[in-house]
Image 1 (tube, rainbow, N blue to C red):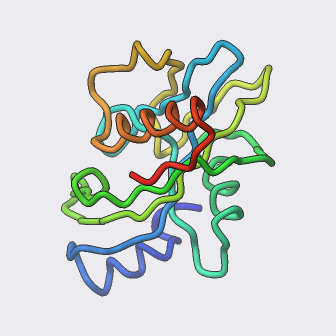
Image 2: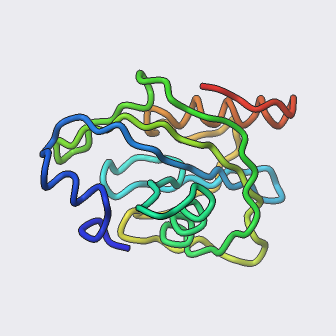
Length: 162
């Protein structure tokens, strides 16, 4: 789905750049070597976790499956929720076009399917695999806290609220 077909696009036509409170979901993929998949986003030009917003009529699981297919090219069936992010200091974003959003996001993780390479889309320039202790310098403001929550979840099994 393109941005001009999305629910958020139609809201933006009505309210301009004003702050939107939006539900969202992201998925942190890991490979068999423990590396994490990040995308270099086309809007900011920096690294982040693949994510998106539900469309009208979608539940969060349908939304994350659709978003991950659109953003990575991979069809993923099993997602594990590891946390929920709503800290306005890291989840409020002003986009390069002036649009402002505060996200309330379900954080999922999944194993990346062996033998499949992620496919860049209109939303991502490229993908990279990073060890948790060797992350890129330039990342979206929410990425470090989401990765830290994932690592705590993996160590404790406890759902993370960030």
